[in-house]
Length: 241
Image (tube, rainbow, N blue to C red):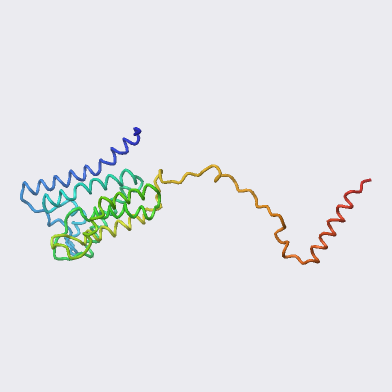
């Protein structure tokens, strides 16, 4: 692994590590103080619930909730930062903000919606649909990896989950991830560009034809006159004084 690749790998771990540290510090604070910060989650269609767009992914209902979200959030965030560096930050924060906004607009309004699972579903959808929209080897392989490891998560978008599970966050996060993948599909990474070979850069040779292009458009009489004219020209050209 080259030094530049090592540095890129190190940088791709920085934001996920900071994000996970913040989430864990918030959970530790809740456990030690006894304060429930769930009221800072998204409460749909209420003005005070808008703050949850920024805070809800950082707040979890307990250790099991936090532990289930930590590995996929860290791995998927690092994945897009390493493999999709050009659009990583823009796409991540697009998924982060728009998922919360979509939950505020469309989710059920009898509870606070908290947790990073909506963002995780958005990241999964983003990586998977990049394989469809970009259709290069790297994006397809990453899509297959995501399906292999996180394919079972898509059960979580089905309505009828337990009352304390925000399936709306999962579904809406996935939709936002698809949209983000589509929006940024033309911002190709350096290693995704197709090489231009030397023979593709050469100018194409002019087309040559055995017969004149209008040969079949001429009448028999016209071709006969042209033949007589050419023979006369050849005869005169042979005379010299």
